[in-house]
Structures are given as C-alpha cells and as structure tokens.
Image 1 (cartoon, rainbow over the protein chains, first blue to last red):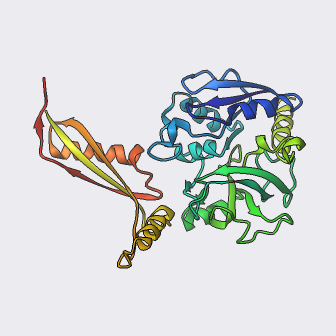
Image 2 (cartoon, rainbow over the protein chains, first blue to last red):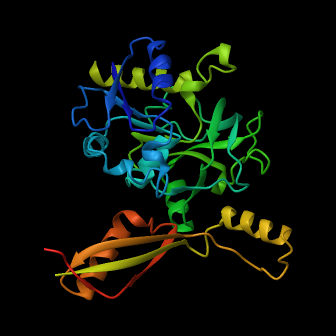
Image 3 (tube, chains in turn red, brown):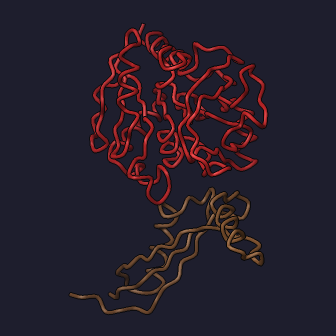
Length: 233
Length: 89
C-alpha cells in the first residue's frame, strides 16, 4: 500500500512518518511536496507534525492554501484515509476537513511528554484494529493542542462517535490531571463524520518503536494497511 | 481606483480562554500594576489594497477575514479604513 506523507515548508515530522511506515509490513511510504498536485497514486495520506508555513497568522491557516490541499480535500471527500498528526491535525481543522480548532495550551507551556490516550471509537480505518477502551502510550510535543469546539458541535461529535481519542491516565481513566493541555472533554483526536479523516495531537509515528519508549502507535498504521487490503480484495 | 489602508483587528471570542492574555496579566501584576483586571491578546493587520470605493474595500477585507485572516469559530474581527490615496498608475 502506498502511503503519501505530505511535506509543507516547516514540517518536521515527515521523515519520522516515513521511517515508521517503512517498518510496517505492506507499506510503501512516499513524500509528497506541498506544491504538488499529484498524490502519486497514494492509498492513504498522512499530514505530519511541524510548523507548516512557520505557524504564521494561526497554526495550520496558511497550509490550507498549499496547492496539494485541493487534492487532499478531493481524496478525503472520496472517503479515502487521511491522518493528520499534530500540526497536520491543525491544518485539517483550518481546511474544514475536521471540526473544531486547536488553541494555545491552557497553561501556555509547550508540552513534550509521554501521555496516555484511550480509544473511544474504532470507526476510523486508522483505529479499526484497536479496541474501544484500549489505552495507548503516545508522545506529544505541542504548544497549541488545546482542542476547542462549541457545545453544539460537541454534542454532534459525541452522538456521531467522532471523538476518537481522549487523554487519560495509565489505567484508562479520563481525569483532570491527565488532560495535559486543557482540551474540551479531554479530546486528543477526532474524525470527520464518515470516519476516514482522523486528526490527533499525539504522535503515533514517534511511538512505534520499543527503543523510543512505546510501540503503541503502530496499531494505527497496521490498522490502515489492513483496512486498505480489505478494500482491495 | 484608490488605495486604502485597511486596519484589521482580530481577537479571540470572549467565550474562548486566552492563556496568552493571562500570562501578560501575570507579568503586569508582577510589575506592580495591580490595577489591571484583564488582558486579551489579539492581532492587528494593516492591509493596503486598491478598491473603487470604501464599501468595496471593506467588503474585500471582510472576505479576507472570513477566509483567512480570522478563524470565526474562535475569533471575531473588526475592519476599519483610513483615508484613501490615489492609486499610482
């Protein structure tokens, strides 16, 4: 399966994604420059972390106008799998492909740490191989990951099972202390209505090797490969 | 056709928490400005643009705000115009 990883000027998680995807059986990762309008026949897309376009104006705001984004919108609209990690999540919300917005962390600190998230919904192809309630140990590194949506949108997100991941403690309990950035309802990741687009602040690609401290993120990449094989066969 | 100076101010909605403003408030209090009750941090953008009329200039600026300069989910904006200048040919 070809997985396209999009590089914006200022992306810094793109090579981490390539490295991790190379370790996943059946994956052929390939970089796609943001000026490109050719998705290289990718079967799934990853928008990596970083500081696209310098985070100028608002995080993710200017990346939305990169030429590749029109193709990403078409790809997502066709129901194909798109994952936005950290800054990639911010880009997807600014592009209107995911609901809500990412605000400055409540305590203002840039948070670089291991955290735990609980899988709330397995409807997305990126989480199809995980179990609801499963706890993943994943790395975070962001200053603006405080998820915000108004109460009407939140009701909609919950009723349509679009809340994919929530910050929790090591036992899977959602507590005030484990919500390290102030996100509403401790939300760490959301999907679009159809589930094919997932955005998340934690970095599964930096949490996919026991040498780094966790390999819990692998389930996401293994899930999407299995989903794609299911579609192809 | 004239050149207009648009002054765009973007601020977080009152319902959205502003930790940056709270940090500045802490700084002002630390300086001894105990009289300060609240600080909200926003953005100011000066946009020079050509337009036939002040209405057209404002309309264009509002389009820019809705599409890019502000995220209306979390922010509000105001648009003001300075006096027009003749556009250079």
